[in-house]
Image (tube, each protein chain N blue to C red):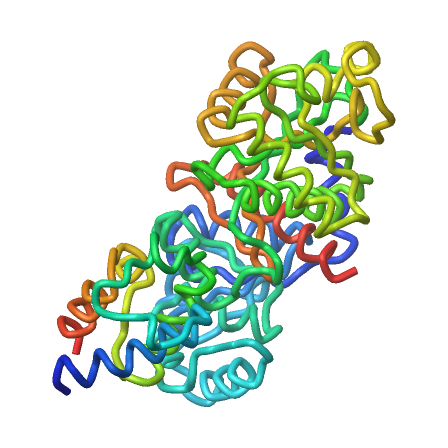
Length: 79
Length: 334
């Protein structure tokens, strides 16, 4: 799967988990400052990624991601 | 009778099923065996059946005390997957769930979520972080709760508070620097925890360096705001503040400093610290100068009771924490 394909899917999943419009999101979106998310939302996102992209992620690693780009890097490593 | 003896007695009346994903650990197996053979819990050992059976035999335990769940039993695994994925608000689908269930801790938590066990007890080989993260992924957080946290139960010689020598305090272990919303969650969870464990009518004080505006600043505002949020979310609970510690637990001081009606001031049985710096220092003060026994930390905020223990815990402490978590689980079912 290309990075672009992963990005598109992840942006949709982030939009769903954090209840945002996908048009507001990009690779540089920060989980902390832009999304202001709680751990519940990260759990939802990790579950969704595991379900749809068939990859195992550590919640701790995902929670350590500053931006969506960092998360994509992590997924690419695991795929 | 000490509080811990009372909790042990209570456990015996309604023994709960406790899953042990670290069954092969020698201390853990001994604690599970003692708690099981003395009738406090029904211990379920989760792992490779042959390995567990061999360890039981080698260590000279009576096998009939335990239930053994084999993580390699595909039929049982399939049953768990079906039960778990059918639950409302579970997010993991079959494939992802099965992958996570390769890990014994998460396997045990899937059992718990699917009502095949009442408690998951771990933390001697797994780290606290492992337990907290697995708990969030598999068990999930209670609706409306913004953070996982913990409380401790202190038995303080010579202290004559509204529950005798006992005082529940939180959070001294988990949530580092809560914002107002998280602080409100800690207070709400703490009330629910003491209700389920001790049958107390909680009177919960959020403390800091100010009593109802006697001091000012953002550190105070955070606590005032937390009280407001907690009262909006759970008007059924007596959560009040901001108070200084003495105004929270001492009726004479409360009378002087708190110039309004309060169900909590002067008679709090639950005290919530503003952050982990205060919480950790406070519990050490209570232990060092007050010579108190402190039980816990008891994790709270999950949909079901998740329990972690110290990696250096002796068997007696493990057993105490196992029984406490079982009584909480029984209390939450009511």
